[in-house]
Image (tube, rainbow, N blue to C red; front, side, top):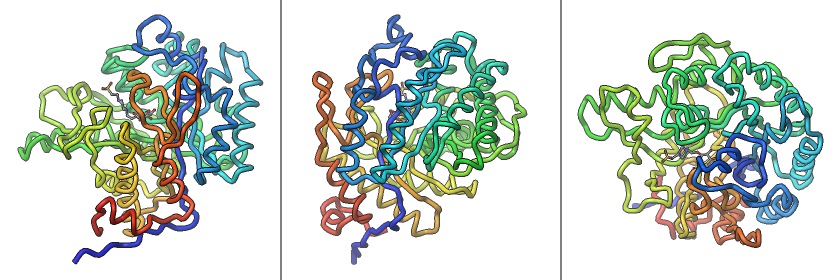
Length: 425
Ligand code: GBH
């Protein structure tokens, strides 16, 4: 007998959406990405992106109308400090206004301090590869402390290991460096930067960090592949987080001492599962991590969809015994029905996790609207809201409304449960 369970979340569960500054604001001219876009080292230019820097009021209005009660976005360090030592008050005030508007509308703000981009001047000095540059990060954090009043969740870094892997191992992203030595050094300095920010902001704010958790599945049943998957899982998913509490960061080749620190919450970004095959090169999986062969269809990103992975990510993350949030989960597709199905299937597993006692307090769909998907440009459509990049018209898709209804009722109606063939969990 198939029992259709009523899916009901608690009243204070956050149902939000997520974005990042460089992907939506437009004219983000002072960071490293912008620079490399102009000199032709990146295939697409972000340009005006979604023109959110001008249309932020409309966007906040829209999310309120749609019924979302939370919003995760990032503030752009390079707007606040476009040059070394030059503070831009206008940008600061704009972010302040965004926070105020959200609060007015009853939308819980969640802010990320670093979402992949850094000021160009900072990167020219060597960025996070140089210990002495952490003083610049401290200056930024200091200003952020004045900015963030009323913000519920402050994340120091978005996906630190993605930043390390893409920028310093595969060199697909700025600063296009291929150096395992530097990569793990940068990771250890991101841990130091997290600790500094935690120290400065904790007490006034809930300070946490956001980690992408791909589920590492062995490519075969062989012992070697299983070991490889465990190794990849450790190196990519856990060694960084372990170090926050242990003070020892175990990189691929050596260990680094970092300050013992803490996190008041942990953000999980979950998209897909990777297939890991044994190799004698311990870093190989970083270079050719492939999406696992699951399901019949791939998203526009070439990823397979694996909803139970979100449960596994929560289960694994619970080892740190901190409140958790799904800070990103989403699908790039032109098939909006598939998006609805994706959201419901993932929420079903989040709901199961809550029922099983895991401390998950919110879910943020990536993304509020179609946006600049880094190296992949504007083709992947992750948005609940469709973006017309010519006119900047925002057109909520059906999924935007369905998700809004779920957010408002804190419940997935039986009719949807049946329609999308959800299993009884
Ligand atoms: C998140 O990253 C990001 O936080 C967000 O900014 C992004 O828009 C969202 O996901 C959707 O992608 O060049 O073939 O190696 C998720 C993890 C890791 C996904 C790097 C893209 C690059 C693919 N990302 N990956 S490839």
